[in-house]
Image 1 (tube, rainbow, N blue to C red):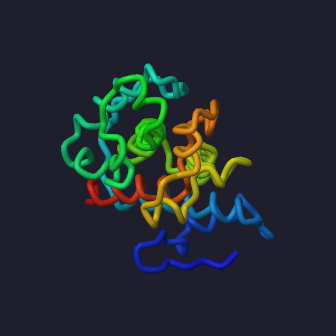
Image 2: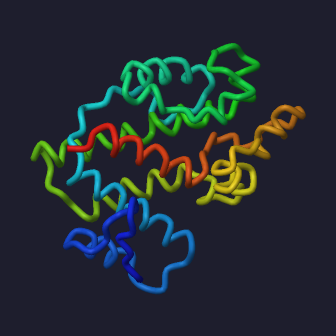
Length: 208
């Protein structure tokens, strides 16, 4: 697999990065390459940030009843709160917690994703504090959890695509929800670029 440090991208060419690549092996398909990229981004957080212990809630649930508690914890951090949800996701649905908004708003997925990411990054925080060793396998495991929370990882990737996010377009998921279709992206996954967006914000806010 090629390594490409690239400006603003993950730095592959170090000892831990090479060990992570070895874990995934050669001849990777597109999904595996995307997951490796996330693993490298997580790895960079280990060395380039100083994370706090994040308070999270309902880490395994995406029920609408969990959105407000998750959002309150997320927005309690003012540096993250300012950029946590891109404006394109609140354009049609401002952040509020009535049933109709929670059923349709695209930002709901981002709240769940932030909670998922911060929960996993508590392990990175433990690595930074020396409470647990810096392990390529653990970093790959974190990346796997995060990748599995993206529409790129499942068979519903057209419901919420990277291109739609980058272009600020309305998601197919949102269109279906507004049309009365039940169960559109029921797992409330985000697209891969949204996951990268979250990791980038964390890197900027907690940079050493």
